Amino acid sequence: MLTIESEKQMTRTDTAARSLVIRDLDKSFGAKSVLRGIDLEVSPGQFVALVGPSGAGKSTLLRLINGSHRPTGGSVEVLGIDPATCSRRELQRLRARVGFVFQQFGLVGRLSAVENVLMGSLGALRMPRYGVASYPRALRERATVQLERVGLVDQRFQRCDTLSGGQQQRVAIARSLLQDAEIVLADEPVASLDPTASVSVLAMLRRLSAEDGFTVICSLHQVDLALQVSDRIVAVRDGGIVLDAATSDTTEDQLRAVYRTAEASGA
Image (cartoon, rainbow, N blue to C red; front, side, top):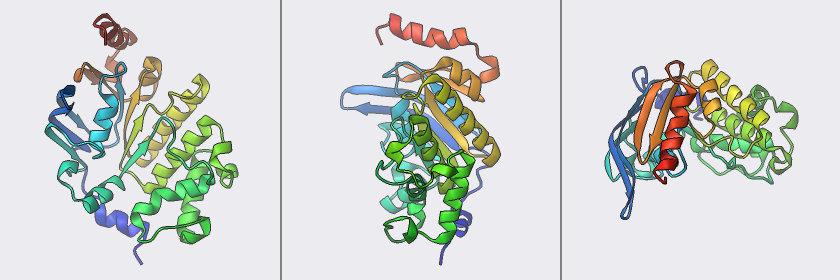
């Protein structure tokens, strides 16, 4: 039987050079241009904060990376693969290597924390699963370990809709850990959390990224959080990249100017 570890060895490519390569990327929806001329490369293990005002195209960019949208022009290469050229099965395999953490958590509220985490393994399993007991014991043990890493092992059998927002986001991150994602895309993951929970969740994601070596591309509105947790900041405004720099070389005033300029232009 194919295990998660053996599947990992079979599907993982050498990403020593780059996790993501985007060239001259355009995306339009009908007559509306959302992204224009995007060029971006991300190295393995980087924590990239994607910032910019609402409507700048951040969420669209993340969905182009995981293959939910197709480019109007240019190209996206994720872990050496162009999602736009993938068959349905190939895209499924790629998405098994790319975790996605949503603003609204993306969990099944009536299921327990551990079962939601186990759902991160479905891409590597041949048959549907119903209930925790239907998953292989080794996977159940791994799911428990990942919940322990995010501080929720004691809540593993608790329904997710009874957990706090910060706890639910930790479950979503644990699901990506079980998935063994090489890239984690996080779309405004702390937008619905209070400031204390926001700092805690992002600090934990940063720590786990450093421990496991996966890449994070995280869209954020909170300038102070972007400066705290990231290695690199990419600012998007009016569909284009207006700043791309190491976090250590970026100031709060520079980032706030991205938003002030957008407000002045009516964005």
